[in-house]
Amino acid sequence: AELKLWGGRFTGATDPLMNLYNASLPYDKKMYAADIEGTRVYTAGLAKIGLLNEHELSEIHRGLALLLEEWKSGSFVEKDGDEDIHTANERRLGEIIGRDISGKVHTGRSRNDQVATDMRIYVREELGAIRDLLTDFISVIINRGEREIEFLMPGYTHLQRAQPIRWAHWLSSYATYFTEDIKRLDQIIERINVSPLGCGALAGHPFGIDRQFLSDELKFNGMIGNSLVGVGDRDFIVESLYWVSLFMTHISRFSEDLILYSTAEFGFIKLADAYSTGSSLMPQKKNADSLELLRGKSGRVFGNLTGFMMSLKGTPSSYNKDLQEDKEALFDSLTTVSHSIQIATGVISTLTVNDAKMKAALTMDMLATDLADYLVRKGVPFRETHHISGEAVRLAEELNLSGIDQLTLQQYKDIDERFNEDVHDTFNFEQSVERRTAVGGTAKSAILLQYDNLRSIIAKK
Ligand code: ARG
Image (cartoon, rainbow, N blue to C red):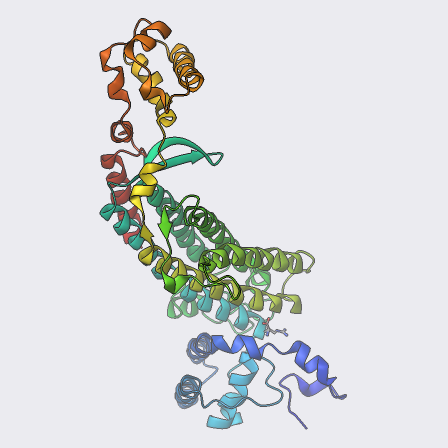
């Protein structure tokens, strides 16, 4: 008969479907290294308080090293009864070093503090790797912006043409969102990185384990101060899922912009073949599938967040098996976000920009604000100039002119005496963007300053 680690008080066999239903090994085995590292340090802690002698500890550490190699080389053999990564590793360690010694490993420890420890180690590492991908992505965006700083395009509000901006400014806007994501990620990693090890099943450790030692050895920043929280807290999972969700919100908006810009109607950008697909029916089609998937996958990660919060909200104190539901949600979100960042990096580094089309989409009415500002510079209150500029727009429309730049000086003077010959200097897109030098604006100098700031934020860790 199969031997279960908790088998002592159970006599009946488990329903086979229940075994499958209960098992988390198929997905939690990816935490094998964290689990082994946790046990390596925990047993050092046991030795420190005299619960393992030197020989036993070195045997355990030798066995754990072999176990790690088996996982790494793919030679680990799963067996019936391996419920999760913790039971699988303990079972195999017993086979390697003998049960007399391996049977002492779990003294004072529960899978409850063990899994919480493993997850925190695993998640902080995964989020660290995601952070690296994200800094690459931001660098690619910024580098592109610097190279294409001259390109002008329409800026939109309500998806209506509003004012001219630099393409590099649009790029910088997303680099800013993604940099905020990095700041937020650093804060979350900080909160994840606290040690639950030594909390036992729920009530604490009965042999006075040195939790500070365990925490230091596992490179945590500190210890969770209450054992019920140590085993029962999954807020760090919720925060990670939320982080992915908000990041994917940003990626989704970024993608939506680019999908629009890649249509024939806009024609601002063209996606590389590497990130597009064709239609099985319409030979002319080139679809922005990469961007649509980035937008679409955001929905699934929101589901992971809300789904796990629903699982968590009804659980009583400390550990309940519901908490095992954290894994599939989180692992899926982590994989999705990691792939998404890499795809988005590929898309943005390979697309081509049609700056002539961007420029052609600029229309003179987008300088109506600049026209109002022209009179402001002559001392007229803005509310008045706004009205006057509006009249110019209306008159140009009435006369069927191509834009407000086509009105003659006389026509301007008829609208308002304070217009002079220099009014026609206003109708210059380049000048319009270059006036916006204040911090955060679309003038070249202001954008380059944004890039400097973003670079210095992502550089520090
Ligand atoms: N596989 C479990 C999980 O992921 C490990 C903890 C099991 N603890 C227990 N008391 N059954 O949450």
